[in-house]
Image 1: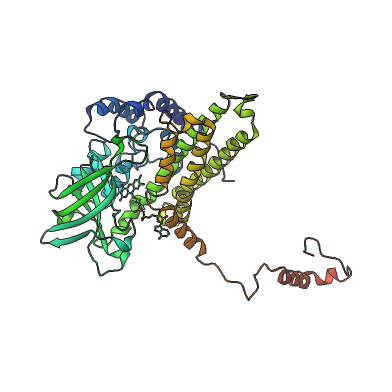
Image 2: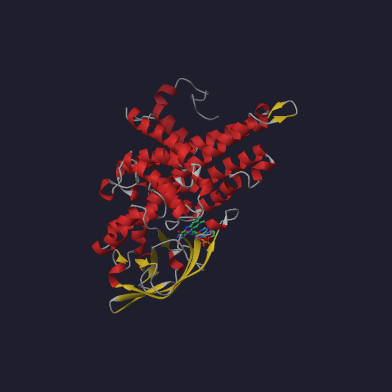
Length: 438
Ligand SMILES: Cc1cc2nc3c(=O)[nH]c(=O)nc-3n(C[C@H](O)[C@H](O)[C@H](O)COP(=O)(O)OP(=O)(O)OC[C@H]3O[C@@H](n4cnc5c(N)ncnc54)[C@H](O)[C@@H]3O)c2cc1C
């Protein structure tokens, strides 16, 4: 029997160590570092680098990556258990070398970069010495491939990129950007774009402004509106084949989506723990909040939703490990991605309600997480698109009914059952067969 819901004792020891380390060493960093992605901030580096060294020594550095990229290659299931712990903090993924968007960008570089590009960017990125950004969404057409306007034109031995991108996270902190641009406008939409490495110091890159999610501090205004004005890069800075930009994007997005999903579990669990604590702390008219049935319902509903979601995340992670092929796990990832913002929003909203006024204030993180839940319904593709993709996968191979009535039509089924058991039923006239509808 292969199903098993237990963690190996040996790996559980690592998780226990992580729990303690993240709680005591990493969580406080969220309150004192301006931006954990800013590798040029000396305060950030003084605080984070020693912790990164401890994680490396423990063999837990960049566990999302395989050994060929310096990671432990634990696989996605173990990573899910780790990421839930890291998701409780902002700094956690950076301290453990698995932060987005660098982790996905490193995978693209490793798969498709030239030796020269890898030498210049990959190792420093894996070492968290430099930062990167992923520039795909556009202000006019979101991330709909049929609407992209940013163009890259080959001019001699250089590509020239022109256009605008929207919400390029960390563009203002990055040493290089990975940019998707239309190279073959006459080709069909999913084969008309290519992916490029664009060094940040290339002339012509304009950061119009950084945008902060509602309720986040200005230090989080790192989702950038970027203009590319005739940005010239060497011809070999293309990643993958010309026209294969979307295929290359999938290398990064499949894993990235599921990693966000794992970390969202950590946030939801924290919001839930806070709700429980508040309910057993706060007195109301004749007792604690936790003694009120409507509060108990909020706690019970939240626990159920978190646990359902956790099982879906873990099963998806297990399937990725098992098939080693993101295409085979597409529908599972789409389902996880679609349910993630709803689960988080529900749990955080209830936690806010149980906290009362302090819950909506800037003295707690709950309002920030509520906006994050909406962000998770947009980043890496809007929920609606993932549901469409999921439905498309689910409908593949679906068979129509044999005639105008459904195949489960009871009259049809009863007739078939009577045919099958007619001989035995012959003596029981007038009675309905067991299980049949009357
Ligand atoms: C926190 C955060 C970080 C991000 N980081 C990056 C990044 O680093 N790089 C990057 O390139 N992008 C990034 N994005 C952008 C993200 O990819 C887009 O927000 C997302 O693709 C949606 O595009 P849009 O915001 O323009 O919304 P729109 O495309 O305008 O869509 C708005 C809404 O319309 C509906 N909709 C759109 N299309 C359809 C459809 N076909 N069917 C049904 N409904 C539809 C959906 O409800 C959708 O939410 C980030 C976004 C967030 C929130």
